[in-house]
Image (cartoon, rainbow, N blue to C red; front, top):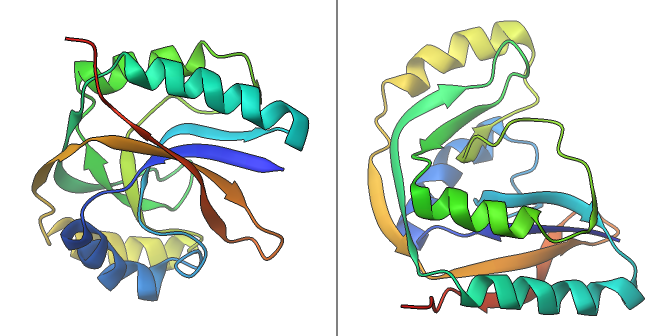
Length: 171
């Protein structure tokens, strides 16, 4: 089964992202707006419980972090995805580094660029038409994230929460 670890922004940010995702993201109905902290990995039902326990241990050692977005950006020409760029804070990078130290069956194909996707799977002309418009919208948000969620993918392609982990943080 496929799993991933994400942070969900506030309803305000999700609603703003969804106002664009409805039109420009074919995954709109499959997953809530999110920032991926640890990409997709595979695990079976015997492996996932020990993995979840390791994640819980890692998360206990981290305090809540600030999710701050400042602009709309794009991964073009690599892929025609458009997103809210999330500032890669030291806290977020440290958390991600510790999660990546857990040995699980995953492959990271890209450098970590924290973001919240608002558009994807467009052809180049559609991307080139929409991207300049979206760049002008302004996507300035700042909020505290105090939990992470391990999601799993259902047979229909949608994602749902398997377990939630609180960032309680060792002081």
